Length: 407
Image (cartoon, rainbow, N blue to C red; front, side, top):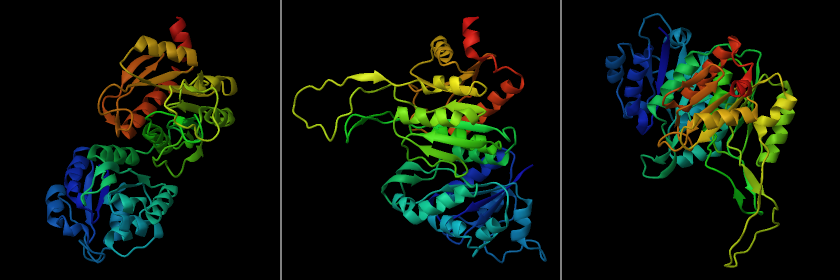
């Protein structure tokens, strides 16, 4: 049974750590809680002792076993360090390597997978010091569960709410189950929207947040892959260990993908690329004059379809955001793109897809149709990689979907 050290810090969201502890136990973890001094202003150690059946650490000098150093023992015995909620204060100390309480001391000793779930005022999250600390932690391989937007405890609105417990749980499970199925493999992922300029002020785009692409990258990294993400404009945090290429337009994304694809073993097209772009980009800002404005558009290239010519040996996987579930149409789309598999999500369903933490995928391969069920996006990504790898090892992807449709 894997052991998780659950670090709880001084956020109002600390009360949710009790339910998270139970969720972790139901998932098969032995949970050991460590509370900072700030956390104890909101929750008490006795609560977590009763819930987990394990001793709780509070102070840097706590020693449940006389003659033993708890911070060393807990770090050596843990399979995962999960800090939820993680305050700005704690994140900044972790990034700086400061060990001035039991939790940060354990973190400095621990050398396994680490997951942090920030929760704080939106301005604190946006502060350059916090953002720099998050970037530093990600570069060291720490998995960050992005906070979500909404009304926070102080009454302000913005990104800073602790992510859903189910999202944190799925991330913890994925981190604890890191494998090497993709070791030595190069994975290229497109992510986010594209922006097609109308003039110097306006552009055409869509609602893609980039969360699914970020989750696919994180899941691939957890399987030992070398990951490159070509992303359109998005505010979502991308894994620090991934190589990130930022673009704006579909043409820029295509150029970056075609440059990277020849050395890739896998190419996953998760970006929501704009289908059309203005024929003519106007200089400056077009003034409002009260008249109708007819905007002439031309089609953008199909990026994932163009990969076959430069990377015929790569496994190519497309995504399809559809309104409804027309599997025949999606199969035809896959055939046109020349991909080996296609993952569809129904964006007409509430609570999944665009701008959501959750998704539900339908995967079509030459072997048939499979569904992930409703999961956090990292859970969907983990499921998708598991299914793709299983089919690939069985030789079931090499034929591609074009042949399946022709047959």
